[in-house]
Image (cartoon, rainbow, N blue to C red; front, side, top):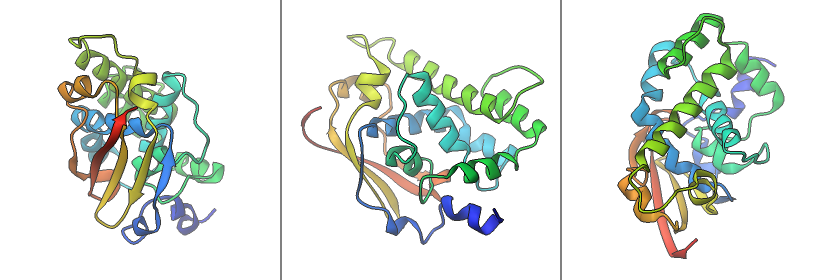
Length: 209
C-alpha cells in the first residue's frame, strides 16, 4: 500500500468534520486520555517519532486488552480517541509497523518506564498501556470504594462527535463520577496533539450509567 493510501486512516484537519455522531459502549476510554498526556506520551512521541502514526491506537487497544475488553476492530471510541479518521485496516497496521525501527521502539518503551534491549512496537504500546493503568490505580487509591477500571470507568456507553475544532464525548454520569473527578480524569483537554491539536470535550447528560 502506498503512503497516501495508508494515511487514509490517519487524521487530517479536513477529515474530522466527516465523523459524527458515532457510538461506543467503551466511551469511558476517554477518561484515560488525560492520564496518557500527564504521563508524557505526546511529549515522548514528539522526540522519538513525531510523524503521524497508529501508535496511540495501539496503546488504547492494548489498554483495553489488559482490562479484558476486546472491542470490535471498528469501535469508534478507539480510533476517534486515537486521532484517526477511520478504523485502520490490517494493511494500515502492517504499513505503520514497518515505519518503526528497533531503536525507536526501545526509546518509546523506555519513556514509559520499560527496561530492555529487545523491545518491539507491541512492547512499547503495552508499556504505555500498563503505565496508564498503573497511574489510574494509583489515582483511585484514596477512593471511598473499590473502582473496577473495566466496568466502572471504560464500559460507559457514549456518543462521539468529531469536527474541525474538537472531539466531544457525550455520556451519562458515571457511577464513579466523584472518584473520576478527584483522580483528575474528567478534565477537558484544550489541545490533544494526536487529535491534530483539537480539544477533547466531555459532556455528561441524564442519570447515572
